[in-house]
Image 1 (cartoon, rainbow, N blue to C red):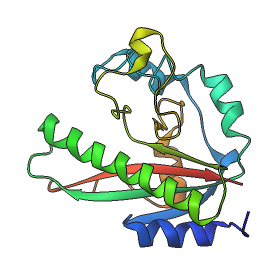
Image 2 (tube, rainbow, N blue to C red):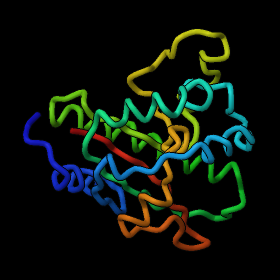
Image 3 (tube, helix red, strand yellow):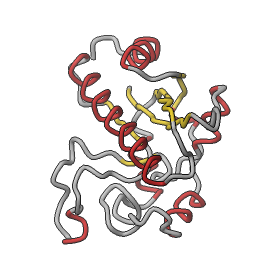
Length: 184
């Protein structure tokens, strides 16, 4: 796999445009159903409508087993200026920009290291398609590009950020979104 390691990935993530990036071991991830319970509240309107959101993404126990096939991870943040942090349209647009960054970063890393063994996670729902095929009971149209959030997998982002020395928010005029890249 071209001698892939945390230092190389961190350098790549930062060079690609993330503001912060820190390594972690996948077995350090904390999982909880409480994050999925937030999804059930459906504040974003994507619960039950998207392959990358609950319940379509799968059950936490299976997802956790899938993630434990990886050994290393890098958590990173993209920081964006925001005019009104309470404006849902603006924050959703910024979230989507972060997720596009995550998809592009993942593609870049897979190509650079000639591997498919890189697993990205972004923020919030996948919005590649205007209407996800999940609603029709059909398979995902873009399985190589679709990404889920760490919360959909039941990952406690607060715990991993804390263990890596990072914070969620920085100010009233900037918004930080978190992504994760898992690898071997």
